[in-house]
Image (cartoon, rainbow, N blue to C red; front, side, top):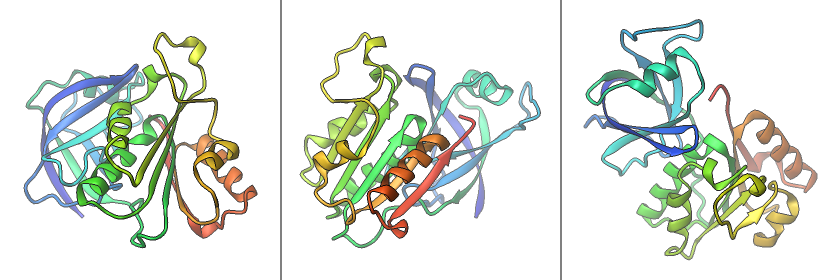
Length: 240
């Protein structure tokens, strides 16, 4: 693994309470879609017991010419400093790490069950797969409370229209609290929803990522449906 100093280009809000941070990409940085790195603040104006380092999945795909990380903006010293960082501010990046990456066997479908900020590595994997024109059948099920809470929703849904091997299924659990229109699925991801789009649940490799309770619920659902444990890969997001 290597350490890099990366410079902030800009930040932006990508959902209510969620921001994306765009950094310059070092020329010698190489990572696989789905991996993560550790970001460390340099001489921050404040700190707390949680420290100055956090792990972030690369939301950007390896082919993109910048690094993108995203975070739910909890009220911690790290997040307060990150939110107010000015363009040109430098942080340390350590990585890449992780094996939450697309499998090689193209004849085996890939199914992503994700929610909330867990979508970050999915964006990276999906955009890279489409860029590389991989032959895998890819399905993404993305759960949120409302469209307002769904980070990178446009990136995932717009790509669906032009790629016959890719299916996007967004689902919202609390549309009664939303001010937007929504024409996708509603409720939580469940077996019945999966079977609308997948004929045989024992064939794909499933990638589960998001808050720990969601990952556990998805794993339990798949196990009860007869999915082999070897076909389930997980990445838990905690702390936000």
